[in-house]
Length: 88
Image (cartoon, rainbow, N blue to C red; front, top):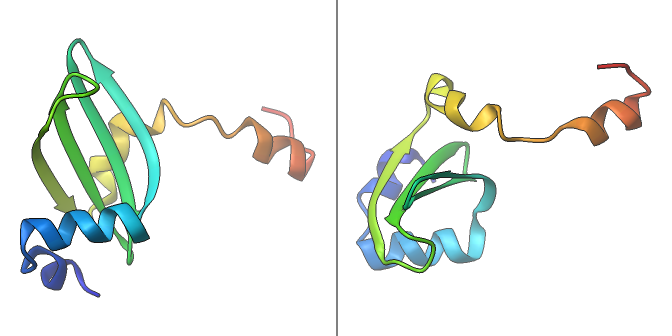
């Protein structure tokens, strides 16, 4: 599935695919705002809501890796260094 095909789906179908096929990459919290980054089919979907139990407020779908920057700082890859026997 391409990014454009995903965007053309109904909101309900997009959420179904996120729930059953996507991988959560990272979560960011900024005050009461919560952002969850998913990866699926070679693109990313960012879901935004107010509060941890609040309803989803919006989605942002993209392929550009520069939009990953805020999430990269929160992803712990120390286990990768251990497996590869590398020093940080």
